[in-house]
Length: 585
Image (cartoon, rainbow, N blue to C red; front, side):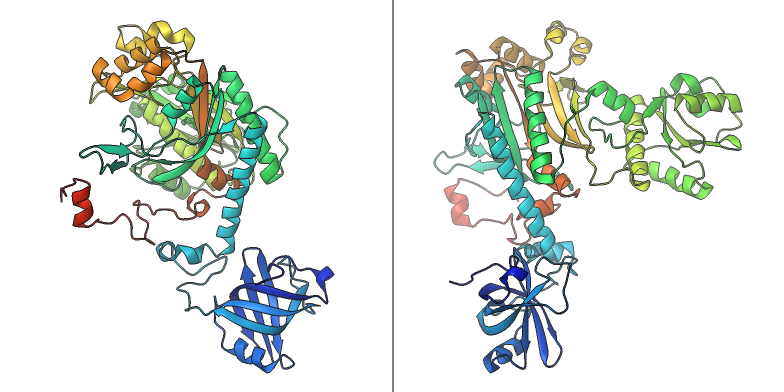
């Protein structure tokens, strides 16, 4: 056998045993008569020693080793005289009796250490080397553990894991599809699934009342730190359920993962918040509730004092930043420039300081101390607090205040990655009107059910009434990140037809794109609903990171390229002809 033990399992109780290890050379430290070699595998690091008493062949081989050589080593476990408490095997070392070089290695293009000297692009090109680093190995282990615990919990709740197709029909509502040409059906294309949405609903019609799948999904959209063109969902659906059944079931999944993966016991119910409250108080539909700093609507309180900026604004809001009244003018000017960046879009910022010396503000000449005190009271500001105000269009200003709130939370250290604040957000708008195309779009997808009490508005002829319809939908938010989203689905074919009508589909178009599910509903579709969780995002949050790339073995870069494989790439003319394709370039 190549090894009797891994490089992470030997302890003092193994002292005196003859063992064989195999792994990669992490580093070599040569002190003349004594050489130390750190041997690494995915389980850990074990120190090897070679000295003047070692066999001549061992000394000769050790002298020729380089980083990342693959070795097989045999020797006795001995107690270290200079112990290393930073590693699990730090009490022992191997007195090397034999070394076999299983494979030599070129010097790697960057150091394979926790803190590497390689840039992101270089490490992406040599991803197989980057994956040897301990932080990435920990990330991949965490992902594996979470997947196993997801399966364990859902199996205990009578869910069946069922695979659905990857080559499906293109239904471009939402993100762009990745399309795949069909050689056997010239001029026709498959699409890669953005989610298994219609299939899981068909499984409910088929009588499989509890389905799940840890599934790859594909969306051709612009990328960011928590988004990849191919990603993994924990996809789930249940029949004969209402919203409460789903929230209880998957709150149970989250609590199970907190306990089994992070060792955190969660005994209380997760808080819940309406979409309207999330926007009004946090400026976001995925609020981070680890800290307060809620938005206050100050429109009525500040108007009518001859300050033209506020008097002409449809909405004025503010946040109270605790214990920051001592911010200098330089700091406040810097914050003002921050909110004026194109990504935020504010034209300026007003501040109010509440200090032991009284109330001071950048708009002192328009407001008396009593007026400013009333504003501070409305923001729940205590002595020593700073109030920051923005104005403009209501929706945009709330978004700007939400972004400013997160920025201040970051600056004040109020968002530690080892503290978790789960939240359910519900009652989202069902539809969104687009002025440019003069039509409604589904906020989630066209299979989301309206709330039962809003059905009269849903069938109204008035566009403004339809815009007020709420979806029977819900999101699972963790630390300001949307981890999961779902809804109670439409199971009545008449309601589904009305949805397609509201979305501007002709009957022929709806039948062409979705006839299979409309027809399925005619054969006894049960009430059903579900949820899908972003597995990559959930793993990253549990690992204390914002980017998901370290939790995916072979991710794409921010332009959607795999720089290791150099993909996407062109295909040759033979393949083009077989697929009946003609280049547009």
